[in-house]
Image 1 (cartoon, rainbow, N blue to C red):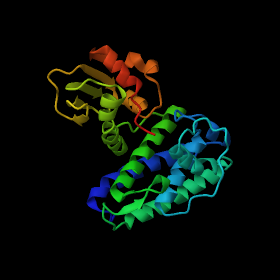
Image 2 (cartoon, rainbow, N blue to C red; image 1 turned 180 degrees about the vertical axis):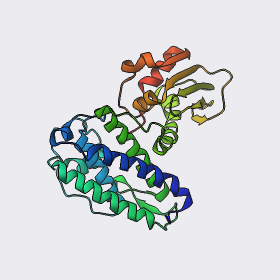
Image 3 (tube, rainbow, N blue to C red; image 1 turned 135 degrees about the vertical axis):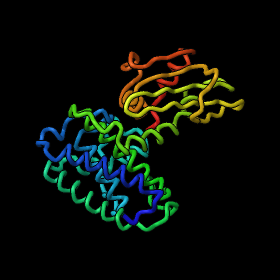
Image 4 (cartoon, rainbow, N blue to C red; image 1 turned 90 degrees about the vertical axis):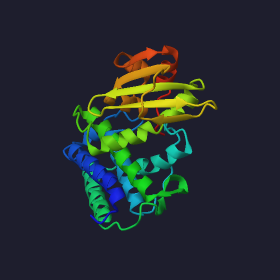
Length: 274
């Protein structure tokens, strides 16, 4: 690959996950494409349509001209409407149409990555007409693709790749959302700390510190006197942080030491994905 060294990690993580998705969906018969997934409002077909659409946008393809139905309950924001467009336009595509378009899109994107010579700070297209750096765009594609790979694995009862390159990218992306969850959404008091102890295929410990002005930051150093310590396994962390499950449904998988009320507020506001 000629991709910039700082982009290599994201390119490899994306490749690993999207090839796993292709392997999961290629053998599916027509009816299996309609199965519900943990991703709110989306079927197997919808997830694959979303992935195809986002990769086509990375390739610079024009967005489809399409009017969304008014009865999509999960579309509650302009961002959701933007994402739904690539999904709804493919809702009546057959299984062979889906797998062939996915395969062709993967081939095109892999060719693009092999020939990528732009610097990481090059500004590229982002949702809703915005721009983002190429590095952020590739990071978010690696993250998004891995999360949807896990959605499909859950749907078909084929667990795996919880410690893949995409999982490490996902860890780093999700951890960035912790300060907002703790300081803003859960309202942790000033000059306090909350520790997250995650075990399983991906293990890490992070401390969110709330300063005197109520601003949160996250780091990897331990806290001597946290208000709460929240321990949970990696898969449960991902499901909560990506809004795939509510805290009440997995409370028995979470161990809390310290302020239980604060921990409950954090875990009930844990989702950081749009």
